[in-house]
Image (cartoon, rainbow, N blue to C red; front, side, top):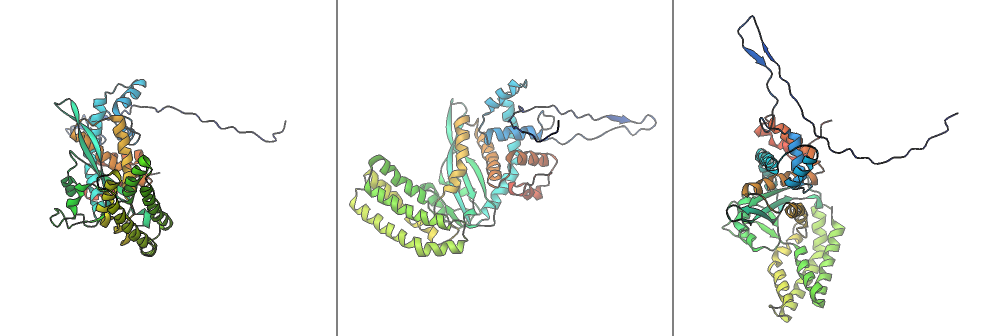
Length: 392
């Protein structure tokens, strides 16, 4: 028989994750003819000295919890099916230790972001157990983000989540110490203190408000009442977004020119329409309240017309917050305030790795190994997610 060809069939198979025990043997040596004592090679560096997990095991727990949104009790159950008995409290200790050691890296990431001329900021709830009261309290994760990809900026994107026990504007003021520039926000009044001459930690910031939030207010009324006025507002805002879609990715100069020529007249017309409708409609009506909201943000809604680096909305930071909501939904709460801080630190590095195209497990494993091996504190930039390169 002569071979005249072949048929090939591919099928997908899965090998379940394997756990292994790494045994390190360090022989002891002594000289019978001299008095130099016992000689032994030093133990390998470990993030948790004398602990069970490798840095890879810790990284797996972190990614499973904060990227795949798998609570620690479920991870404990999964490990039990493989014959490994690890209580979720043990896993929580691993998470806390990793967050402590990763703290300087996150602080350095925040310094990089605050050196930018334009940032996004938003906040979301982070339920935390309230010891002694038998219930949870509402903490907040404040997101500070940079994303200049819309206009081809050179700085890599990144985000830092900072935990605070409340939503008071002074938390934003504390987080933004050292930042002077344009801040893209929603309409939360707690940010107003950042624009005042009395602001602590820097000069008053320039605020850019979000057209997506303005649109959302009108959409709520239209969906509920079918308001023709709300529909007209939505149509006008859609024209602004159509132009933004056409100029996305262009340089800031080109974007600014297009906005001045094409968008500014539409915004001016929207402002006249807005004031006209506010005179006709009761300020106490549902639609009147939504129009009043847009009116209060009007100056900030025009900031994007004067700087090509500014986006029309703050959707970039809202998209980065969505994984926080998924973790919150599955895990329900953090165990304490320190757990909230750990949540913010690890979520910061995972989210920044993802938006820079870096695989988070490989990054965290390598970073934890470098920290365990004594990575110099004056070279933290090497550990930032956008500088990570997978070794071959």
